[in-house]
Length: 243
Image 1 (cartoon, rainbow, N blue to C red):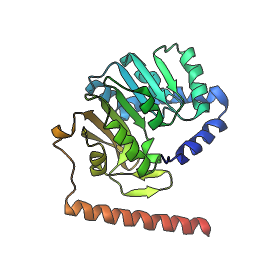
Image 2 (tube, rainbow, N blue to C red):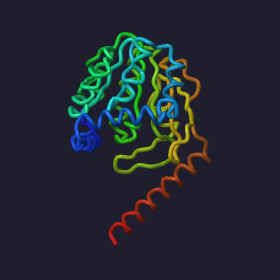
Image 3 (cartoon, rainbow, N blue to C red):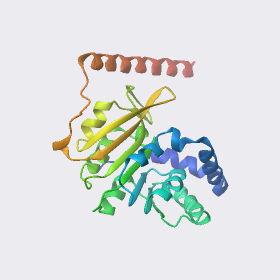
Image 4 (tube, rainbow, N blue to C red):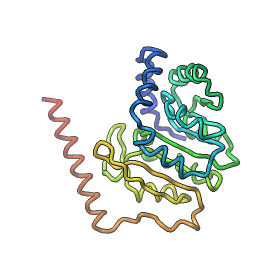
């Protein structure tokens, strides 16, 4: 199976370029102080999910979300392909004595397949899928369509802006609903730096889905125009950098 690992490679370089465990400690402190857990909709999503046994964070990075959710779940798993990030977060897990947090140093699809989930789980991402090309995100979402019913997800991902460029891929509500065909979705529409963000879902099975977010003709036209505008802006930025 072909994989899109460019985002992993870029982020791994960032983690390796940081100043060891101290930078990870500071990042955790900064995230706690920023209030992102509430602002980005994670607290609201946790209040909405009936799942309390297992939380799986895809692309857990510096681990800040794992520490925030550990009081709410029996077990929390961070899936992170960067060994550097996993090594440093493992130190923080011991320091903060968060005994219910576990790390899996793996690609997201391989990790979920190897977990062989038999009971509902709560999945999260923090602007991870927005850095990965459509074909590989589709593979991941198809896998989520096969996990136990009554699982839930909360993706802090941008949507409804027609943009496809290097390491920045924004999809529309219809795209998410089409590819998460076994999930009832609710969009929080949180404003974030010019984008809308926040996708909550519950696995209920295709037969029970009622809202597919099918776009109107007008919405399709506006989506096309938005894509053309974004391409023109990228051309102008390229010309400006070249001068």
